[in-house]
Image 1: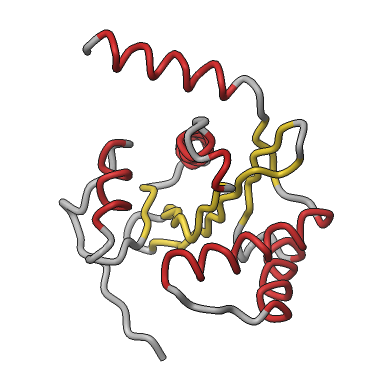
Image 2: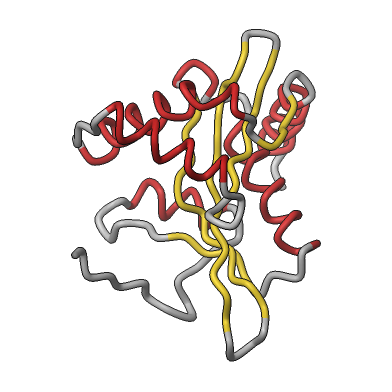
Length: 165
């Protein structure tokens, strides 16, 4: 590793010490819905209905079997969030964890928040005995693909396909 890479990692670790990661609570509903709205607009140029987005977040928080939000917070409030869902595999008799969404406030994007959220969820999935941690990345989204590859993920096993209904 080059000295500059090492220095960058040390800087990110120091920044990570300035925020905490915790499970989301009911008090986070409005912030999480706002994050989802901002993320859809930024990544897909799609405008989400605020009422629907808020109801969707509330449903996850009310029924943990649907999924779990983790939030990163510092002294200014919530700065990032990640939603993970679990899918049962009858072949392996274990869960597969899926990252459904990740959003970090633009001002905090170079502070290690994203990688800390990812590591937190990867550790939690491993501790829960999950078979793998997966996510869907649009084929054209090379920025996201590169980011997740740096974190150790690959599409070597499967290519995720979907039919929108």
